[in-house]
Image 1 (cartoon, rainbow, N blue to C red):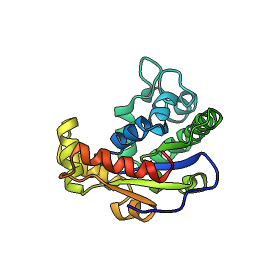
Image 2: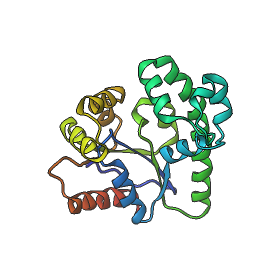
Image 3: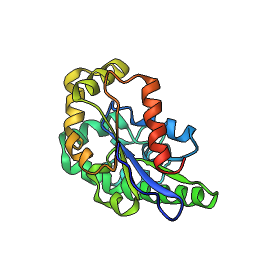
Image 4: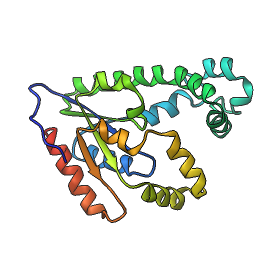
Length: 210
């Protein structure tokens, strides 16, 4: 785990990322329990693509009614199939959703800073894939584990076939690419107990003044 000098101002703005099945969300919850304010980009993305969400008019215009369900939300399973089979469609969807996620993330961070938060953690699954995040963060925490551990965890929790999980992993940044952008790496492999992960999260939080 890396160590670096504390900043001279507050709050810290820290990105948290990791591949599917890495335990990133668990670590985010642990940091929040220590007092960090967690800004969950996945949750924001679900909100803007939910029933009558901010992204839905543009999604309907770009992809048609077939990709909007009866509640007025994005039909996630149909869009997932399209995005994996057609990279251009994925890029088009991201061009609609990502600016809205950025906007809502910034608003949440502003509220947290105004409330006196010492640490704002941005939970961003695709942080390593996006250059726009590097300009907005003071540091990056990566939760890391082997691909075999990722596959085992996701298969057990979701019921997806191993090949389907491998396809998801292949669509994300490589493990080495994530580690390359990390200031702090929290290892959460198969042999890491929950207590050990908690201790590692506490060590990371302490680096940022928690």
